[in-house]
Image 1: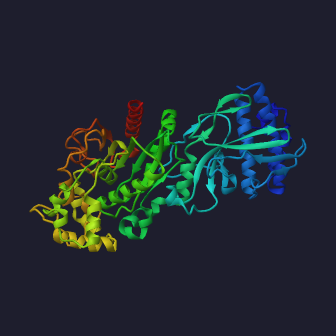
Image 2 (image 1 turned 45 degrees about the vertical axis):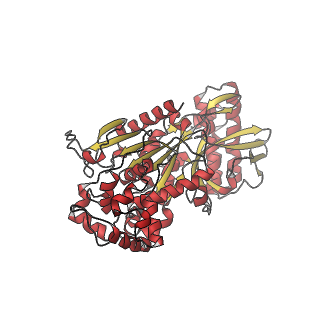
Image 3 (image 1 turned 180 degrees about the vertical axis):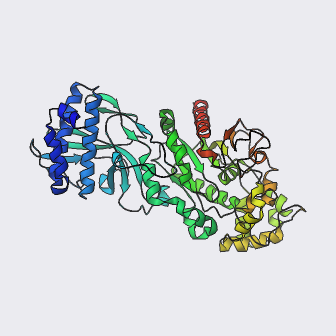
Length: 513
């Protein structure tokens, strides 16, 4: 990199000096890096195609933010004057009208300073171009995260560009998920981006996987985590892809898929990714009822249509309830009486109605089921799993309601019979009363759906299994497509499955247009 700066007529000693000054005199170090930025910008105006000069520019901009971070400076409240070999330079930023895009609210880390670690992040998805990719981390927790449908603390990828106006170095913060190109040095150029690092930093900082078991065993303790969260600013021109995780899992499980899909410019241009996360110890009809309430709330703020839902494992079972109109059919199947004739307390009646009387979601335009035990899984019937199900601590209100509902439910000879409210594991058994009843109801016509099914390699479908869910449970008559991939139960992280999701999304975009 030093040779690149030397070719810009910047003595190598200046770069060495800037590096040495970072700890002793941060302002002077910033000044020297900005001199490098100025020279690189000037050369790019004359020779816009010089990749080495572009890389030198990006590196110098990143180092400016590196010094700011290490020295814990806050240059964004007012113009920040720094000395340099070419006189004083005023570091400032372009005012931004976008809500929340105030640099004073964030700490910035250059993406090139972050090494990737962890089982979910193996490949780095980047876009070459002009600018320094940064991770913007919110300085504080967002107290309106639930109302704004965002994550509690913002971790977002931005690209910083510095343009000189006389002695002013003006920083702009660009959104690489919103724009592919940017005008710089007199022409439109590709904007540099790192799509992986922000996800990796968010995972490392929040560690959602640590709570996966606890959210299953003690769901009431984590009730506030049942919600939709956006991964990027809402764009009415981009279709929402809502991903829903499965049992004993978290939103982190989608990182390989989202990281890979964001490598495709067509996906970035046409889709935005949102999570639905929830304590997986809840019976999944209850989790689906919570999701419907979230969708009601979010629809008042962000009008949505033609949304694509991708559900893995139990998340697929939740997704199935978004494309079903039950009327009172499910109620009659379970209780053998009409709702108004069923003797339940008002609170229990309300909970039961929310869980089993509902219409399909009109904002859903397509569903992708991945390794979904839609007809149940025999694994959930095994003794050790039954024991694990028994130690899940159901919320008090569900315990009371479940007791009433069990007394009112009419069971058949081969039904799963419990003396307690069903847990999430119970609602995945093939002989669960709800599972049997919901599979008697047709899916709402007009909503296309697809299945992706794992096969551990025996290649013996329809007798195959992903190790947890058998083929017969994931297979759906009427699916637009069915893709069997060489995978265990984590099929949503399989390369072939991700490629299939990409194919389906692009098909959805084409048909929508």
